[in-house]
Length: 295
Length: 281
Image (cartoon, rainbow over all chains, first blue to last red; front, side, top):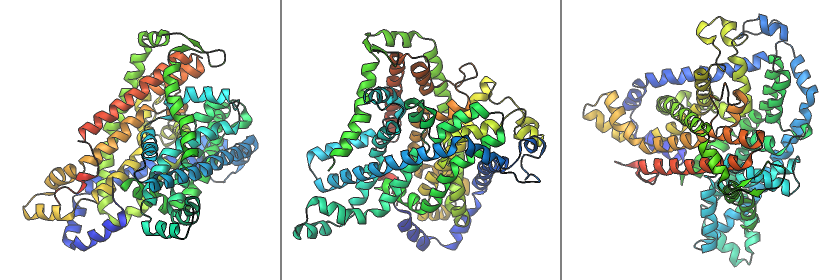
């Protein structure tokens, strides 16, 4: 789709005369209008939900929806936390870590093997299978997955969510890691081999540290997806104690739907961890994804 | 070393893909025994007037959200590509909707668009006071809008990256030839973005087949099945009505439709994506 941004940027600054740059800006007023308008469209709901979450129920009906209330109330947050949110939070953390860590590790091993195999027919086939797997939507296979989970007697456990999550994280993770490991200079692998290191050792003490930026990228990306996952918990659990956050949100609005400030606080609470993760890994995530799709 | 990943993937993605086809020839209520039933499920599904309806709803959501998202994303992408100053800031905000769970987004808009206590009545904006989720047409439009709310920022970032790949020399040459802004947009920017438009459209079109969380939490398929798209139809048949055979048949239809659409769009794009990116350099 794109090549790396940084290389392109230097190319552009050298060729752009200030005249063309200014003119490039001018014909864009329509795009500018759309850009700033859409920014408002994006911000208002986010702002509104955060604001509503600190209003009391009485205030919610009487104050201007876009202005802060006279007094800030944290009662909604207390109410939501008392409704079992710590439990759902812990579940979501377990599911996310429990799926992301193994998914990244086994995908790294597969990617390493695929790159090292070169023309090896079997592993090339495995790579093609994973690439084709990118096109399999979770929705389409959810019924057999449900059947398998029942047969494994894992229904209503967190493992039921974790196992398919790992499987569906593999294709994209392998794709990105393969692209990244391909860039490790062949000489490094050669010298490891001459030193008598096994492939296993080469993977973990050479390729793994060198691949760290890409590992962080895919780790964060998978964490976002799995944290927000809805269909797997919905279909594979019924027990309220096994709920993850998105599912808890859904059932929460069934129970407390009329209490909009409480629903708002619940939305904020489920979203904050993901925003924090994004704040930490933003640069890494965006640059890693463009690099991964680029080649 | 590829074995663990291969096993996991085969067990929970490849086997189920074959399994769903097999299950479409059985009858199963989700709990009891699975019995072969030949073509019964397929007959039931294909004769059911609900199928053309949910196919149509899926198509409507797909077409409307494509038509709504593409021009806006394209405009914003072009804008973001040239405005160095705001790019970083906008990219941060634009990415946020992509991070939120669809359940959270659906709940937010449900409350925000409430005809009695939402933003419209609160601010006394008349056109905003509508029964957004209770009216058939409006509910469909709301789904399209909320989907766009989440994905327009993503697609504009894709376009931004692509516009920045267009060699400035093309514009300089056009300027020497006396081409105006609009002409440059039509004759340089758009043709150069052809492959990106195909890529972005493929993601939109194939992605819209699988919308589930958002619609389920926002409207649950209602009012009166007005937003009961294919993936939702499958879930309701299978897990709510306990009829897994027909639900599996729908899932097969879902996969096949997705593959056909992806292949069709690929053909339109003339195959490979990366090669012609720098055409005319």
